[in-house]
Length: 400
Ligand SMILES: [Mn+2]
View 1 (spheres, rainbow, N blue to C red):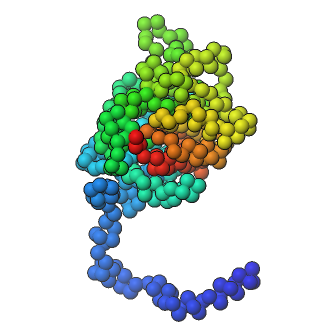
View 2: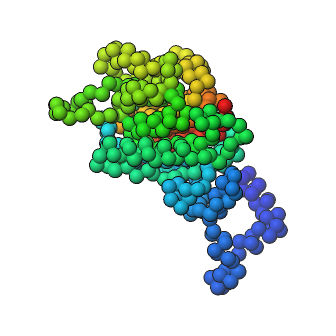
């Protein structure tokens, strides 16, 4: 203790001599002199969003104004005044949770994940990946897609239309090459903050429209390929249609031809109880391999990464991440928690192992902030996972 005091004091003369203290003297006649000397309009003016192709675009700026966007990306009115601005990745929120089978609340997931991302920035370097997102791609936050909360069908269509509109735009970068898109052009990629897992169905429809069927890497503790059937909770009225839910959307995706053929899709982190082993057979019929949560002990993260890469090959990849893939100790705030999941450290290692894959789109879903701890542990985990996925997008352009 004494040693510390001594060493600090010994620095004081040099500190005073440097004039550092003098600069901290209170200003005399404060307000008057400040207002006459400082141009506050320029001092506090939002720094511009820099569109890679066209240069600065005047817009809001999260860093200056404290508006909470994902990882301090620039907020953009993607369907309004800024519709002509170019970007490479659009972050959107999908505030929807009315097909949840257990705990609702994921409609507040987009806000929660943005809140959890306040210490992240696309301008900071991802050290293990040796990548700074902002060096490679222009990322903006388009805010939340309006999704009505009184009619699931309408809400999901709203998301489908908004996603398709964003995907059909032209990306900021083109690399002087052909892209892997069906039309050979470079389109923005969309990273969606959910929302319950049903949102992946309309999102995949948009992706398939641009790229054709894609290999899905599905992080989850649940299969989500269940055949649509009346859900528990009471007798189903015989004349009512059975709606899509967050447990059946992949069954629809397979039936609509949105998933890459030849068993080139994979679940990672599965550990839920089944109705029967027939569930696994039906899952395989939807084109999926299963990597169980226990694999982290059996084959380690390297074994899981190898299995994923073997399954998806060179296909375009869509990553959909249910936060319940992570253990409830690290991510308790979710609709259907299952014990025995991954640690956040294991998840990072697995995601780092996916570098080089062509990630055409991604979502992170089932974050229900109302069940989170006061320290926002789930929201912070989800935000960091989304940031890792953005890094994967930054590392690998969609060039053919
Ligand atoms: Mn799940």
